[in-house]
Image 1 (cartoon, rainbow, N blue to C red):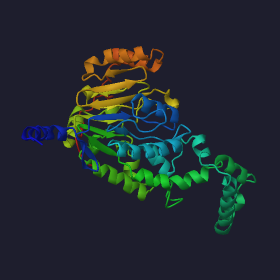
Image 2: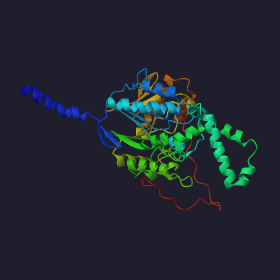
Image 3: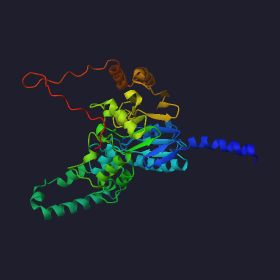
Image 4: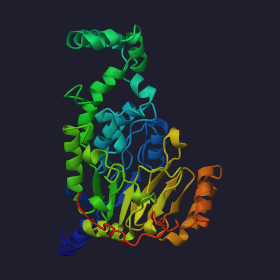
Length: 404
């Protein structure tokens, strides 16, 4: 090798290093060339796959085709649709395939993952139960009820005697075949080795890739001072020691799983809080799900927050879309094209009109456009006190950034 060739190779090394993705720690990555973020899936396999294909992340067989791209799915895989089990199995396989190709799949914890682990099944779809049904499910139902009724008769004869004659049939109707297996897979109180509970507890609540933070609900002023690691640690600890009387961060409306204030919903976050969060984590934007936009990847706070819960699932309209972040651009991808994400609030009307042009039949987007052009009036002053005079006491100073 000549000296000239050697010097040329040495000059290339710094350039190559800049483009190489680097894991800073379990919650932070740098140097990632392409990041794709997708919103809540809610048990819809077809639209989940359509979104991955639209972003060029999987081939026709559903195998990883994204190379070194980092995919971030911001949580809420389960509930509202029938395909949760298939989706979790697919995204788990996809993560292994991506890793072999130099890419990465980050599937974050959403409030619906937590609800399934803790037994809040308000939004459970019948198909999610049926996915666990086997030829032995009815026998399992009978054996479970026999044991339950025998224990109830032995420990509380009065309660046993008060059961309606058709209790057994009622219980089976409310807990169809597959329900017990679903709980054994999701709830560690039913089964200490519950596989999906373990899967959830291996996920992260919030991560940073390059200059973007990703979290399911959002980060409020109350949690602004927390590290990304502490958010996950507290949620996992809450799941491991779940107390329905004191769920803490798991059900806190200001917590990272439930908060909507970065998505333009009341009570909205102060701009100073958003700035403090970004400064705290060395980021330029926060990407969130949880709050459906019904068809548009939507920026708030001048692009400092981006909502990617476009309503991918059929339950919300099957609105396939994704956010793509590279060193040069922030782009919203749709089935019929890609659009640059507006960097400021002033250009959101033009952007939304372009999105509507791609999907002119979406009435929810037309409603959003009307509100954007003609916002409702600012709320009136607080009501007078009992004496008919306006309250004189100064309101408390709003919290900008704290640690909960």
